[in-house]
Length: 347
Ligand SMILES: NC(=O)N[C@@H](CC(=O)O)C(=O)O
Ligand SMILES: [Zn+2]
Ligand SMILES: [Zn+2]
Image (cartoon, rainbow, N blue to C red; front, side, top):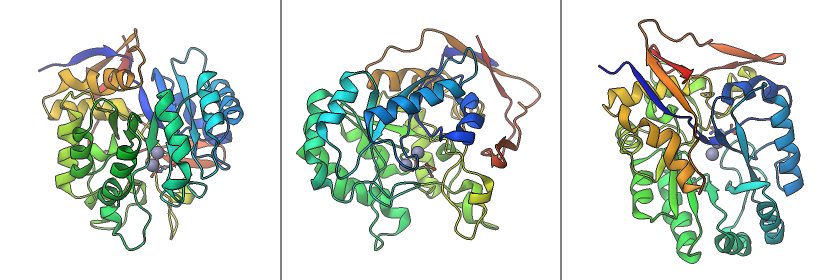
């Protein structure tokens, strides 16, 4: 049995670092990743290059000394985004990608896109400049069942947009279905997909069976077991199109534990321990590095990290706190429901 593996330092291609006291509390939990694509859904959202640059400075100030993390900033696409601003922010090295939230699809998406027709000129400019579009892929049509919203988005929105915009590089963020896996596989190297840690671990029973568990509620919502198994097969396949985006999305417990609780799982601290466990279960530890440290960098046209981390399986579980403090609030860590014998260390 393998009890230690050394891999290139992982990257997180979908991360929420928030701002203010929450940023101060969570930044260090992602400091061991090499690069992270930082989501722009602050309140108000990050819509200009100047805002992205200022946010990047706040993140750098919140990171501990010696942190490996180099934040990769994104702009929040709105109906009124000016293509020239996006191109300039990218040319100046401020942003790495642009994020599409269908208006109303998820946390802090009120300023999102209401009609894809409105962003056609931006998408065309992005295709031309090879700026990736990161997509929260769910329709917001109230007629569509929440468990079907990803699959319907692929048919109604994503596929038509990709056909209409040849050359547009797209990342399907946090895919949760076998449909998402299949669609990602139908694309060329212009199409990638991130998979979260938690969607490899839980299905919808975790949220709803035996009582309602708000800490397992995120968007897209976890689906039935067949979909979780499809995600595990994809993540552990080694295929270049699939890579880690934790979607670590901290919220104060006070906001999660409500009659209408908000969506998001906080997985940054224990992600690598969980993934090592999952990949070992799938007999795929030799493909963990591809998923966490090679495939995403390759999609984004960046070299893999040069330094390494080591994961070691010990007899005693790694000790993660159940909660961390963020200012006056507490934030609950994602609980995978099994002990984490894989410990993460710098190599
Ligand atoms: N994933 C979530 O459930 N929540 C994210 C938003 C998102 O990634 O859709 C958040 O910002 O809290
Ligand atoms: Zn999302
Ligand atoms: Zn997210």
